[in-house]
Length: 299
Image (cartoon, rainbow, N blue to C red; front, side):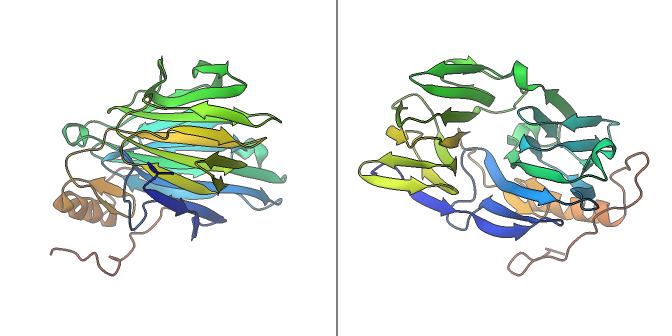
């Protein structure tokens, strides 16, 4: 497949209650367009007494995109937002100069078995928007553009692509598209229909191109936005994401993203001193980790 420059496999990572499949960042590819972090959560069964609980933690310089396939998460943040997200909807939180949020199993579902499955995504902000005021937006499933073509079902989760525009309030030229097929093998033609860099994440099923088969839980990356002609095996679900890359490098450390490493230093100190603000009714928080090997403080 001549225009696929890299194949990324899911790597196991822990986010507390269960393991996830880490897709980005990758040592050979830190970003795809403005997308800088992607985790595949689950699918996992949480028994009674087990919950998805991520205590308050801070972010700067990015927008988070939460997209569930199964289950439910209650989002709370320092703006006063309290929003439950369910499958097919989008929670889009822009950290800008700084925000704190928590993600937990909703109270009304506790005490019963829970099933969790979804994607947690970070989108880096353009340099001119890295220090904007934080904000939050929830877009319901039925508000996202959805259509069928040539036996395939499409949903535009965020951005602009294929002549459609999602209502998710993004800050750069990007796209995230969900594509599914049914019980028949179907062709997908994307020649000259995308832009910037493009990644194709195969959630379920497999994809055929140029005599090769690519299986589930892989990302195929193209630097020119052209994923060419593909064929989807029966019952395949995939996500195509990407957009225009930024001219500046982005640094990523823990939950912080910035074009300026000193800004990450400042965010570390703010969190150590608990100066980001608090979420009403929540007193626990995730402590600041030490600098990882190879990424040292400048102080």
